[in-house]
Length: 131
Length: 132
Figure 1 (cartoon, rainbow over the protein chains, first blue to last red):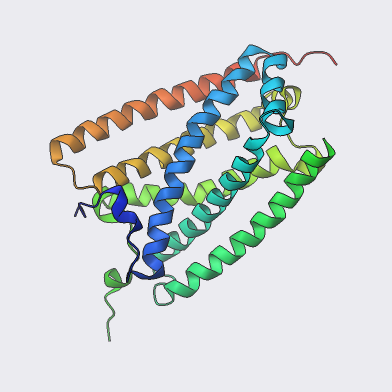
Figure 2: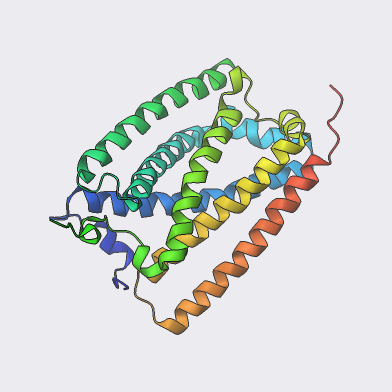
């Protein structure tokens, strides 16, 4: 049954608990990832334009002048790790696992995913810093 | 005492997508944890040699297993993304005729996207790696 809720309804958290927060941010993160997916198609299409063009694009968004994209990449990684962890929780819920302790499961999965995010960012940053 | 598990389930698009599409949304999501994990490792870590620049991408895509991996990744991630978009739009309470337009529009977008993604991957796999 449709809930007849607009996008702004996602962000009315008052009195709805952590489960609703998880739901709203699963959607928001999903929208961000869909946007990035098509941006990724566009960037990868430049492989057909040859090494100079492609390496210029990757270099400029990694080492400058458009290295602000590194900050966007960090935010994107945050969103992906959040979405994945919450998604696994929802998949487990479908199998009836964790329904009684939904709140605990939410925090557990997000803490683990954020720890993995920190490890990932550390190694990814090491590559950028070394060059 | 029997518990009503449906009352305990978190809020999702299960009701609006229907059981079959919701099932595929969950299954594709589980697969994507694997695909995204491998891709992030390969593109950003890979023992200190991430596959980021032109030559490394081409070398990677010349391996038929990686080519198949990325084509499968493209099909699954695009399905998961557009099916998720459909659930969000449906949840806004649109009427059945509009739902049909949305559904067919997203199916068309899916087909165009995976054809483009697959053609791009195959085209890249056929580009010769430039000499050093």
